[in-house]
Image (cartoon, rainbow, N blue to C red; front, side, top):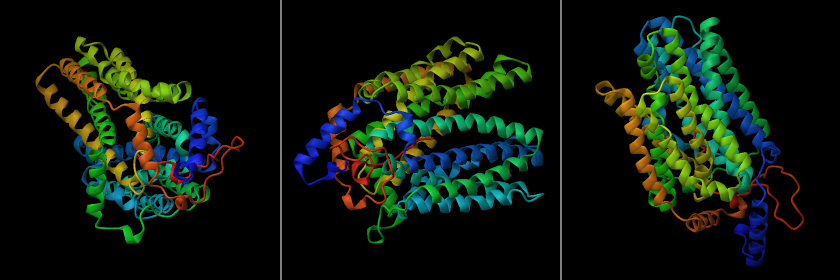
Length: 473
């Protein structure tokens, strides 16, 4: 694929023919995990996510035990989202200034410290909240650097499968981490979950240090400007280009409407049953249904559907992500609500890797982490806004009516976005233009991959063949 940036037209044409031939065979997870560097990145992501969700469940319980306040325990859970909302784009731009491998290792080792300090006995609640916030400051640069590094490691052909694997793993880790963390913190000790989280940071740093090759920073010292200006360039790029803007808006709208059942799960369960045990089970079913559906959709689409078919599924999946929730208007029982949320999650899981893969490939050199920051900040605000607005409406109106009509509105908006979706040729041109911005000299330490076919370019994921970012969690 390195001939995509070659000066030899005949070599470039031959390589394009090889790429077309290769695309006819769906990439498998075996192909993906044959890349040694990806195994290191994946292992780091897995232990990071599990540790983070264990710690969230443990800290929430720890704060509640000390304060006996539902509000403060909710604050302990929500404070981890603040870095993305108040400074995610700046922190992501910071990751662009240094080698991504160094950013990942440094962030892991730095985040260990505040989590370890939470193990000190008799800490005031406000100190706990500050420590959780401090640990969360490492999330934007970590996730931005990991997402930006991914296309350099796996290459264009394996990128959608890699994104699907990462996203489904994140959703699975969320379910496991919350359940295991809450059980461990309740039955044993919250401190045990925190100790495990500290160890996962150390293990993650070791995996990156031992399994990922050093590469130069995306931006040299001479290219740096003011950090705020660099972050602003990320916004201008994402919203200034039609193809990138189309993907960003679709992702934000999908997030705004699809998050509502999860955000209002507690209220829905409370209205459905007076029994506390039943309410807890119903709430858990609704909250876990989205991640479960996402995992199913991501795995099935990535494993069974080829690239051309995935592109054709963008429009129907986009509409289905909101349409699946419209039957909430009939006030079904929580188990049926959970099934509707699973169906919506399947559509999201089938759609997201395709959108993310296109987004990554259309970003020019040096914008990976910043674009990821823009997308993550937008998603966090979309989730917050969707839950807040519907929560306010549900205080005044019947909850099923609010969720159902909200989903009707989402279906209409997604239908408009699907109708205005750019053509495949438009995306292809944008991908080729972005690929041309990557100099061959940037191909540092490619990862080992299976031996290519005779005459074909080696699939070692050189930087010159790909573009950029978000591996959206």
